[in-house]
Length: 484
Image (cartoon, rainbow, N blue to C red; front, side, top):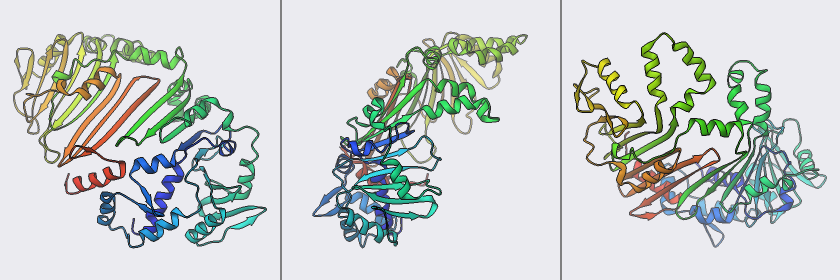
């Protein structure tokens, strides 16, 4: 960003694309019932939670964020004046702003419905920003801009339109303001977007069903992906919820799916019970990242596509034995990487997984790498470092671990409560914690089943939680000097 105007336009776009508070039936009635995506954002909560403040008609951003903009070369000389114009632009920030993508739209088609408090002020603001006049088209103020996009003001609503093609903005407004069926009649959609989080998104997966139905007739990758697309048809709709409250970013995802559908059955067949038993085998340091996926090897082996492959292994004892070992994996496969410093190459890591034939696997590795490793009890240690790092593969309590790095595993992740919660409760989970100077970043994501997932990012400085914009500024200040 080189000018303040660009900065404000980005801010306005963010508000438009992600804004909405209370349910407004007038706006919901202008969203087609079969819309592929509908987004609603609580403007007031977003402003409060993000760190933005409005005082005496001026936009006030956190100092750390302003410092970052200046350091990046952003021209802030007219910030107060341009910010005041934006605040007084005529947009009604007290009410809901919706975005949606029509079911029959092109990939670049997006509509935003923005409540208006003063149409004349907004018209003047748009004309000033666009450098062009809006025309009165039968009571609809319209402006066609490049790339098939347009703006229109009608009945105290600003329509931000993209993907218009040859359609005029006023004709698109007429279509939307006279719908026979709207999203307001879709109970699942209304429930999703009317949640209490700052940003709520509803996805109607009917478009995926159409793709699945036509995938077999399409060549190339679409045809090859047909089995996966067929399974995705089982997801009726998906909802995403984002909250910026309490000094962090919280994300939640929910699938509307039948308990006994093919996709749910497949998921239950290939996943295993989560467990935190492997954490003592994984390293802990000042900075650490963990990923875990619980898999059932036997269930995966019984998939038809896998059976087709394994039938080709007959007559090869070595391959058959290896496949039997893979089938015996039942539980989390967990990877961790840890380091006390973010720069340089000083780090260590480990991969661990439960295996019913752990001893046999260790024997195969020992025979295959006899000249490269030395057995020490239930562990095979590399005779020489690889790329300057020591390494070993071993067996402990029915688990196989592969470790590498420049430090011993004196500390392990069993003592990290957040990592234990994620790995121990999630079929698929991730956790990382990074510290740079006074800034700490913690991320945790989990999915207990196919019905949904959640994630949370918390950023602190000197132990204090930061709002999103404060956090962006603090992260920029903490990490801008890093070379790697």
